Length: 579
Figure 1 (cartoon, rainbow, N blue to C red):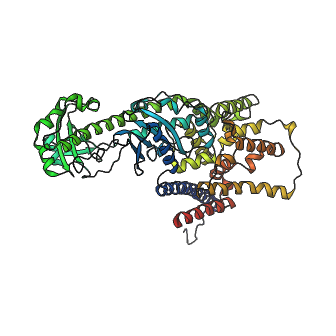
Figure 2: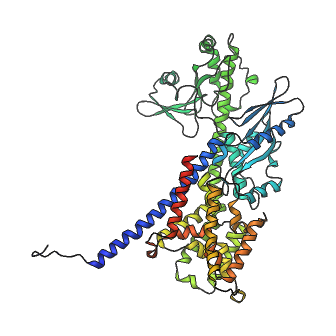
């Protein structure tokens, strides 16, 4: 207030400030709604997996695989573990059959994970490998099944060969799916339960029996059963390999025994401590009191403990407690082997990051160049633009198969993002989604989509003249909402169907001969001959999602698309809560 007169603010600045708040407020709500829908896809998928129980097709395959072991064999089904123990009529162990799920569920290929059934003999030699079910794109899975060599290459090899496999040639045209299958197998063979039948962590008393100055135990995040012992100065004294929870199912006389093996920082065994036990206590007491049994392990070290043979090494049971002591010995070896498998799988994944980066470096480079090109003055160049379009179609499309699709995004939302296998696609997705939000430029649809590039390359002389009738425009307007309804049914309601069939992008997988996608691709090109970029304008679900998130002053109002997206989310949320 100046001299009793109220000073009014600048109306133009006030309107600009209000417009800015409105624009970015609405944009923020759109992004939040998009994230909420993805979270709903994930929650619905998790609910389905948790309530789905055992894979019935895996059960049928396992029953057929029992014939591999000869006549008179019996399989004990342990469905909660995804394992079948195969024995002969006399009870002798002949081998085991396992399914890779649910451990393999985090190994996502193009859009989902694959559950396999693997048969081993008693020496851990692989007898057969078959696909039970898959949430990945149907056409990629069909390529692997038709290949005939990828799954069968493991027959006759040892379990450890799968754990050590790194440089495995994937199936052409299904690189992500075949790589994820191998990762899923390795996760299944290296993964172990993490909940112990005993205390959550070893007692400090037992740890101090191995490391007298130990004051604290720190768990290993990668493997349940490894604990690092430190003193009051936080100095590392060594580490403990605990047989629980890995070997909780190894029963002595009447129950499992928790055993701790102490290692120095150099890997030498310092001692063995018998912990809590569900076995008959007098027998466990005999084992605790027999110093010769616990001291015999001090001659071994890590690595190497996982390779010993109890019979060849002459390790015998404690007199009067043979079953209990031998169960302890077997649990030590079983845990050591599990820890070895875990380390091998960890090393294999580390190497696979480098392989994936090398493999996808070309796609990343094209994405970076295309993003720059789309926002530069060079985008109108008469010679550079067509040249880059040929690169996008030939390299990203036909060679790499790196095309974004709603089916892939729904698969990622349901099963997780395959960061290791799909660096190129993840990078392309980041450019497609984040750049429009930050800069208003839809760089993917305009410059990086192979199918969009083909539409742009269509000769003008071949354009089809069509009457501009209102009923035709109304019909075209209905295509995309109906496709989104189908996405809702398949993605959230688990209606049988393949989202890849409603988009033309799998047509670039020429090895797979994806007929439904090929038909959509041809119809889309015919539409684009009648209406420039007709498919992108009226039928592309993926492009509409990108455009929905794209910022811009003209999008500062609540639109029909916002109401549709909100309805999509609320209906899905209601179904989730009711189910």
